[in-house]
Image 1 (cartoon, rainbow, N blue to C red):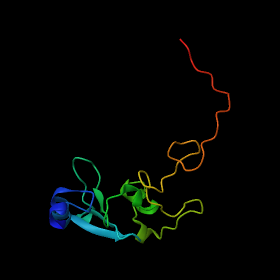
Image 2 (cartoon, rainbow, N blue to C red):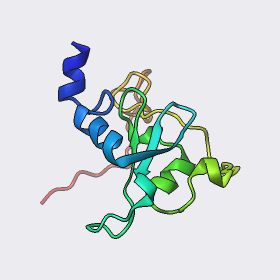
Image 3 (tube, rainbow, N blue to C red):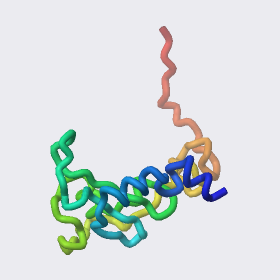
Image 4 (tube, helix red, strand yellow):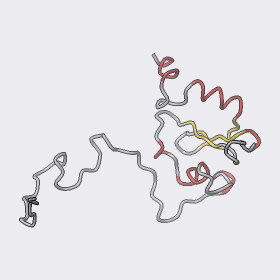
Length: 133
C-alpha cells in the first residue's frame, strides 16, 4: 500500500517522478531541523525558461508548505542567494518557532462566537440592525 501511495500521491512525500528528477538533475543543498531536504539544479545551472536556478524541497513525510523554516523559505523563493547552512542564519527575535497548520483539526483556532468554539456563545448586544431593501 505504501508503494502505491508513493506512486500516486504527492502529499506523503515526493512522487517517483520527483525523486527521479532530483536524482538526475538535483544537488542537495541542506537539511532543516524537520528533516526536509533542499535541492537546486546541479552546479546552480540557470534554467533557460526561468532565467535563474530551480530550487525545491522534498518534505520529510506530509508535504506541508508551512513546515518550511524562515531561512529556507527565503532561499527557496530567491530572497537570498545563500542557503541557511552557509549563511549562518539566525532567526530574528520576532520570529516564532514553527507551528504546523492546524486548520481542519480539533486544535484549530476558533474565535469567540464561532459555532465550532466550545463554551457558551455570547448573547447579541443589540448593536446589529438588519438591512431592509
